[in-house]
Length: 224
Ligand code: CA
Figure 1: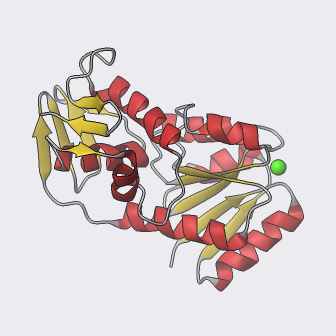
Figure 2 (figure 1 turned 180 degrees about the vertical axis):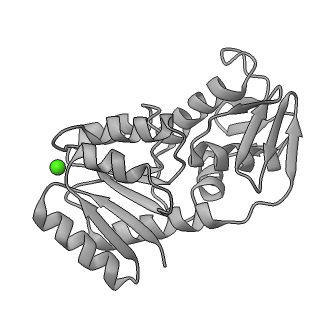
């Protein structure tokens, strides 16, 4: 199945997670602090990192940010103990793919993990072009004016979902289905936050979007 790095400093939760994920057939390793998380997370070969936010050494936000800055595209699911933190997370542009609030139901976490793994293992095929932007599907790369654009895995899926439905208005629900998968629990505000980040990366002028257009009361439309 998948190779998963679990980063959690609370021994009971770390143990519960690793037993649970091994029962699912995954290969699991655990680390308990932020520095070890960054060091191990930078290694190749992980299919997923489950990353606690409150950690000794370096917090999960910094670990996630630094992994992305170093070019690591491994999907990350953040574990947060605080509900008010959760809403913030997706807007922070940390590069996380999803988050789950503690205390969590193991079944819910398993569903999220399955959804993230399914999304990231999809084979993506040809090249999509619009304006100055190219999406190299099989390579998971995006270029603008010939230069690579750093997108998180979720931003990549989101852009691809929009671009493949060019000219059509997509509701936020439909966007969630296409970019995250039908079994995920993403808020509409989180979709909006990802759109803002994506515009900043691919639009010639993020303040006056040319490609990702808001359609009031309906959702978003992609224009080539
Ligand atoms: Ca913790």
